[in-house]
Amino acid sequence: MDQKVDRRSFLNQLGVTVGAAAASAVPVIGPAEAQTASAPKGKIPDTPLKMGHMTFLTGPAAVLGEPSLKGHILAAEEINAKGGILGKRKIETITADEAAGTDANVKELRRMKLSEKIDMFTGVISSGNTPALGPVAEELGLLTIFVDGCTDFLWDKAVPNPKFTFRITNIQSADGVTCAVAAAQTWPTAKKIAHIHPDYSYGRNAFDHFTLAYKKLVPGAEVVSEGWPKLGTTDFTAHITKAMSANPDIIMSSVWGGDYVAMYKQALRYGMFNKAKFASTIAFGVAPHAIGKDHPEGVIAGVHSNYYFTYPAGNRWPANKTFVEKYHKRWNEYPNFQSDGAYHTLHMYRTAVEKANKLTGGWPDEEAIISQLEGMYFETAAGYLYIRPDNHQGYKDAVTGFSKNVDAYPFQILDPNRMITIPIRNITAPPGWPKPGSGHNDPTSTFNWIKETWPQVA
Image (cartoon, rainbow, N blue to C red; front, side, top):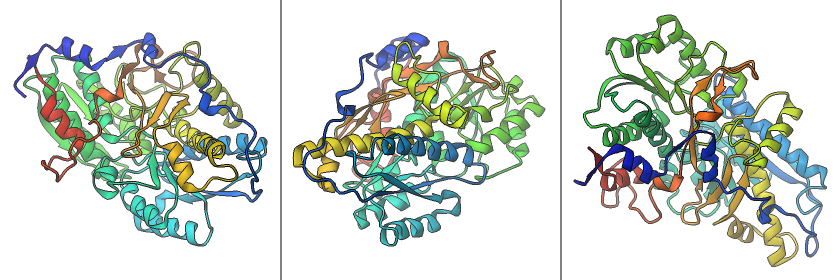
């Protein structure tokens, strides 16, 4: 696209906002009608509902995975305290450790369905797992709501026409693009970018989409270094020193979970954060207390473009205040975006069942439940979540922010007064945009959409 605009005008077109007032992007209204329960119609069985929940329970990824299970358990306890879904069917949860690896996870999904007879499958953190699990869930006819595993590849290639599978985390391409927009807005003269990413689908996706979007926003930007540590790396020395030796303006990273905690602590010893600006897609995606007071301040510390517990503020979005208070009371810690996702997955399912019951009476079949999930707007702690009917993908406004030490918490947080929000529709491919292999060979639909439709800023 040859059209050129100035950066400020284009960022305004994208709807980028910075600060506490950015929460106005989310309508401030009372509880959504869809979440208001009513007496069920017809005869409801009292047999338990079996839920399979797979997440990282061991290893460095557990700082993301354990909060997912805690969010799930909190929602199940709330629902069961009221007699269960439709007041009759209590939730029983069967867990699985995602750290077992993709092949083992696929076998476990089959076992859960065929032996344990689960009614629904939830969870999953890694974007390396959902493309393997999604087709199996479709084959088994198992209603599945992925909490994460955000890769675009799931819908672009692995399950192009989903029926039983859904996902509620923001799509992966939005992560790299959100980080690029935030970095370009914050440091518009920074042109030399060094990268450190996990060497699998998430890291490659973050690199591709950040690089494309950033080069659109900052003319003359170039990649000066690439580092690709394996998942579970404990020694990041070579990657840190390589990035620093390139004399970059920005070091950009999508290293996540316990790997990120290890990397930032090692980087402090080398003075990395004093040598260049730093931007991350998911640094603060971990359980909030996993980040120490020693973390550098003022860096872009992403949360997977999804949710952070201090935002939106409770006076603007009471649903977040209520969720944080309930979660802290139950677990004596604060939630992350996985907690938010897993918690609201169960309540979203409950709501779909309640709405389907009003239409059909009795316990609704999966067709009826799926029909209510498709196109649903649902109130979450992060704001409204929309499930697009065409690809069963959840969309909510993307967020990121800046690290800051405050007296109120014994760990570093994202500055509530400097949160960056972007309407999700402005950074993701719209319905019907060609998928890879259909008229283009770009990595994702969103990559092609940005390449073809975003102007080059002057």
